[in-house]
Length: 87
Image (cartoon, rainbow, N blue to C red):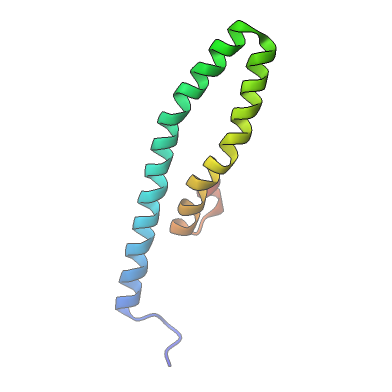
């Protein structure tokens, strides 16, 4: 048994990494577009009442944690770099 991957396995791994990176970037774009209305709603809510604006801000912040993970995980697995996944 070989300990090293053969050429075909390497090509498959590179293809999977490229697909994972593409998925992460597409999710990042979709979430960026999704966050614009959230910011607008928070702004309008804060104009109405600061307490409403704070509540909306807190709720959206909690909501964005799993969204961020949806972007970071594919980028991390595609690159193997935690910093790139985090950024």
